[in-house]
Amino acid sequence: MVGFSLLTCFLAACVATHSGKDTASKDLFNGKDLNGWYTYQKSPEATSIVKGLKMKAGKYVEPIGLNKDPLDVFTVVLEDGQPAIRISGETFGILVTDEEYENYHLSLEFKWGNKKFPPREDKKRDSGVLYHSIGKEGAWGGVWMKSIECQVQEGDVGDLICVDSTAVQVRVFEKGRKYEPTGELKVFYRGGSDYCDKSADFEKEHGEWNLLELYVYERESIHIVNGEENMHLYNIGQIVDGKIEPLTKGKIQLQSEGAEIFYRNIRIEPIREMPILNKN
Image (tube, rainbow, N blue to C red; front, side, top):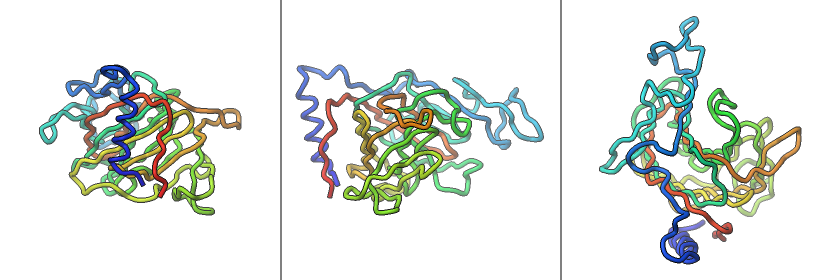
């Protein structure tokens, strides 16, 4: 498992390859507004009031859609004295980067709020960071884009979920679905085994900020929670006409999925190779 000291050394080496300021690195959240992002939301639950949205038999029958946020699901607030993106969770939706990214180190902090909404008011708090996101909004479940998900759910942060027709390989125990660095490679894909459990839970107590990092290089990615690696993906791809084709870049989605969550200090920087992390 990897600690902060190893990550710090790797990042220092990356910065050292540039003269002066690393202008390619950037903050994806400017602390003021949602510039650089757009939103998409599916139809809300009947418990929410959205004027003008079509209903039938007591249920909404059309999505809220692109860049419309009548319920203020995605807002910028001050949380613990710092700017943060608040995602209320009241509707299922996504906050999506305008740009696609490849070969990068993404870091962000998240913290759970207290509010929950139907249909998940009695379930674990849930969100997610979806990367290599391509195609149309709403392609899966009426809301998500085709992508690879780093799960952000209470007790499950770092899990893999294949969203829509994506596929990856992960090392797991024989016939299992739990990541094991020395295990055998197993294919995970939507329509088969579409999720893989992380090796261990490194999430902090409710109400504390957590550091989530993704290293993404070519067809490989690593999920790191509070300095500890708990998932490593290989041969990332998408299924096209029954064959797995390489998937190496895409947009980044942050999920709204029934629970209040805050994100802050969202930063992305390019990498030239995948870091060598401790596999113990």
